[in-house]
Length: 124
Image (spheres, helix red, strand yellow):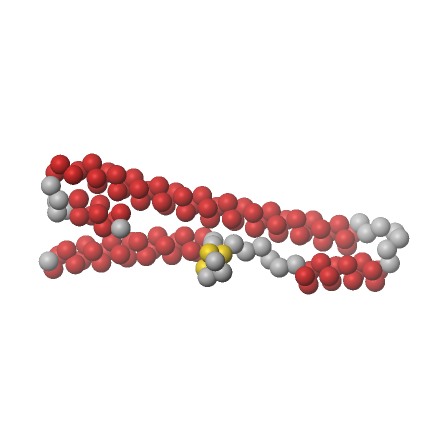
C-alpha cells in the first residue's frame, strides 16, 4: 500500500502540497523492510545457535561419555535425544516458514506489484 501511494505521488497524481506524504510513505516502506530483516535475522541466529548446541551435545555424548555408562546406555541416550528432538523452526502460525526465502519472496512480490502499477499507468 505504501508503494502504491508513493508511486502515485511521484507521478504527480496528487497535488504538490502532499509531497511530504511521498517521503512519509517511502520511509514507512523502508522501516517495514528493515523490521522484516531484523526479525528474519534474529530467527536465523537462534536456529544456528540451536544447531551448534546439538552438535556440541552430540560430541559430548559420543566422545566424553562417563566411564560408568556402558556403550548401550550411551547409544540409547543418543537415540532418545535425536529421536525426540524436533529441529528449531520459526513459522508464522504454522503457515509459512520464517527464513530468508520468505523475505526474498516478499521483496519480489513488492517489485512485481510496482512493475504492474507502472505498466498499467501507461494504459490509463
